[in-house]
Image 1: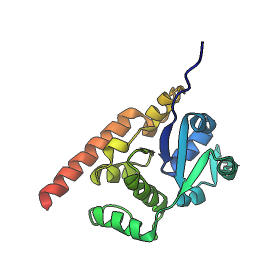
Image 2: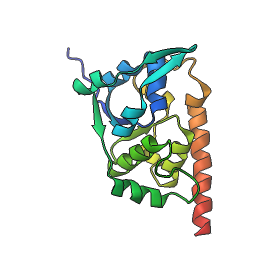
Image 3: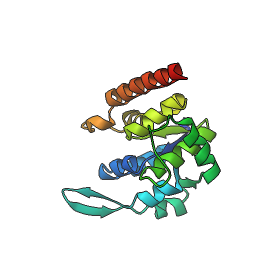
Image 4: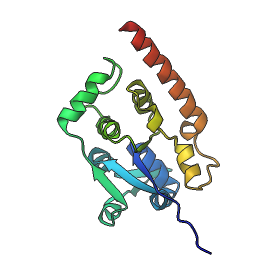
Length: 181
């Protein structure tokens, strides 16, 4: 009897917060075993450490990159600029802000329609919906479920209920912005 190997899903872990949450809960390597993981270079540079009870723990993603468990993707400044123009003015990031990791990741996501997008950043989720990428979204809780990881005791900001609420809010914003055009 042969065991059928599960096909890995393509996934971009958008923000450093999602990676940090996976490290804090010791789930990161399980995700690597179940998904093809791609991150933006900016997210790589943003993801250096996490804290538990004021104790600081280093995150070294280079070992996963050198073993090809994580692939680094980049977006050009021209591609970033194109995405920025799709976002309603005053709503999201600007170049030079703290959200460049999310901005670069969304730009990469938009160009790769077969990738899935996992983030716990509510603004990034809303922008993904506003620019029409909602079919590429996956909640943190769903990510855990697809990897057969227990989702017991996950923070509220990571659960499906919060994810669905944010998506619903974003769809309302998108509808409103379409009415204003």
